[in-house]
Image 1 (cartoon, rainbow, N blue to C red):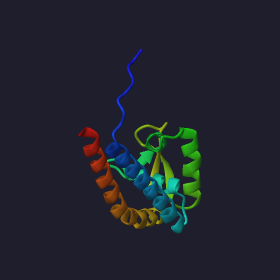
Image 2: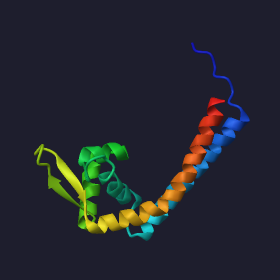
Image 3: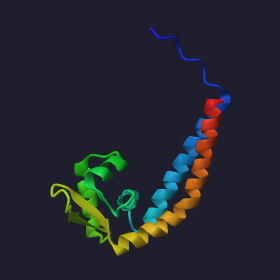
Image 4: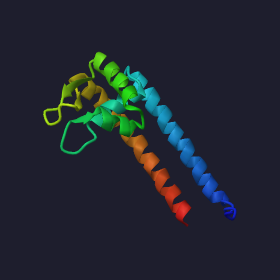
Length: 139
């Protein structure tokens, strides 16, 4: 039987609470900002992840599923909604015919760029909180 863990000190709990608050605030901001652009936060993430791989401007369904921590069949439905909205298009891979590439369309790029610039400051603030929590946790 393992011995009980030592109690966590108050400063660490405060840092964890602050981190969770700021993370939830960021997520809420993300939801509201995406909605103001007429899309869902998951649609925004699809747009973002199509651009998230170095050296190319697309992502596969399985890569997007991994980034979203979702099942591929659910991502297929999400990509279909994005496609219907004119944000992305699917293309068969020229390298592997079994793979489908998801490419950003001009309307999707416009929404992605508008949202990404809004998120930049909030991400920087969240990064500061993560850095503080890491320092507090390691001390």
